[in-house]
Image 1 (spheres, rainbow, N blue to C red):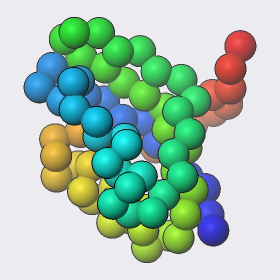
Image 2: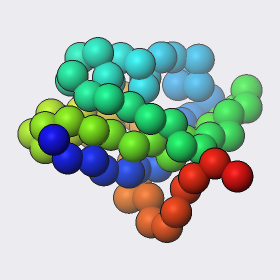
Image 3: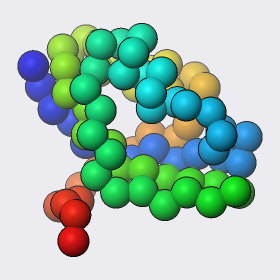
Length: 80
């Protein structure tokens, strides 16, 4: 199992959809939301993905295909 942290950026159309939940269910990934800011218009979340490397890659490809912007998360995103 590997871990990868990414930043998901959601448009207004995607804010209400359970994208992170569906990602974890469809691709057998453990998702840990490290930090997030969601409003009615947009949102972002720093998400730690844990699972098989291939599952993570396929999951990221699926999230991207849904219209979510995915960027690598650099730095320490822990709770304050």
